[in-house]
Length: 631
Image: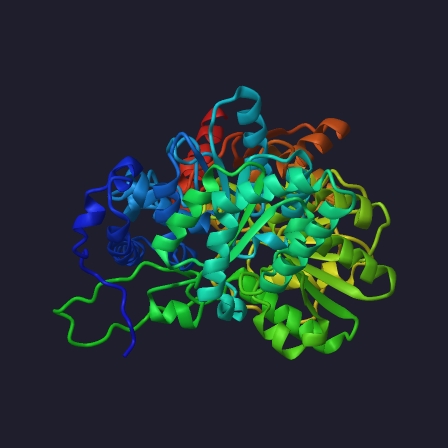
């Protein structure tokens, strides 16, 4: 029988008694399994109401309880890498009743956020940052002699990024007093969890073992070659019984793997580890989606959840579901398959975004030409550069906010060498409920300043396909950036057509005021013009770089005002490109720039975010009326 998300709030008296981790620490260890059960039930119920990430959270329920039980939070510092894990942490740190507001306007942040709670010790956006930040805190704590204990919890694929290993290498070098916990939900190693490993982990984390080890070192170090032999013997024994030799070589004391769902054993292990000196590494094996059968079976599908709508008992006939619009990601996914079928040189690369970028079908149809490099954005870009050097036609599918991590590679490895790499940049502009850390608010600004780079901004689904074709056929680095979701369901009629690089199009000719649109907000501008009743020009600029200078010259002949509209920050964005050209050529026109302001736009729905910034039809209309009243 299919397990359903509960629609009624579960009975959770033990959980409801905890508004601060200090109350959690008053419980007996025997009460912790019951608390874990209630926390998991409440998490299922709450995320069912709000939507959001819950697979990773279900997997770390016991680990979260054990950490707050063994550590003196908030004095001791917990850093959650990949904020998807942090929902149980929010519940246990005074935000239980607010959790249903998560990801909604004025509600809880979907990720740890320093301004939200003293328990959120470090804000999370991109993954793989926790060890670096924890090391910085540990070094400061040592200098200040504060006595704080620091633990970084990393998982959900984040260990594949280079930054994590850079931090591990440094932590071992400086012998920092800190704990790194690998939340490993890879099902392939679940058989390693058992009585022997539990016993071995208990021994390795015990004070007795640590004392014996240090005492033996002092004695044996006085005997020539004795300590070296003992160290090698210990290393080989631990290498046989645990997969931690790599972390030992980096200078960590490796402990594990341990069962991440045995809360009492976890608590004992963490209490032992807490006071150990030097860098410690605890390997915890969990099951993503633990406690919810569909999520355990399909961890990718249930990584996140849309809000569950309650069925009305008065409805006797099923409602006809609305037609599901194809997203820009869907358009890209289909384009990738079609292009690969026509061109054997086409290769798709993604840094762990196969589902998000809609490359699932591509990976199945063209497995030999599909490369998921895991969370390694820098490598993805340089890998593409190497492929381009040898005659392949790589396409890098990447989110805008994640492309920021590979900016050096974008410039030095691709653009400086003028290599033929196409970038399909998804999630441009604000992204709604995931908030400012995931917004693609800066890509136009940081891309258009790079020589050799072409930057295209499709206004709808058909234009997205057209500009993907154009960018792919261009012999050099080219970016097509597009938003989350869909524009307005525009039918895709373009198949293999291309357009001229750097040329825009006039959607509606007019006079006095021209709205120059860069991207999908064109449809909001169209609504505003229709409501205004004025004879206003509407222009789809298509390209930020190169910008259509001849079209700007043409429009300046019979327009007094240019209004630029973009889903990018106004600082250095498309509007700035127009202003630069107007200033250079001394065009007799005034420019009004509309875009994302110089501020971080907090999580809400996309529609709410556009309205807040005055970039929806209503906001644009008010600008049109203000300009018209001047004449």
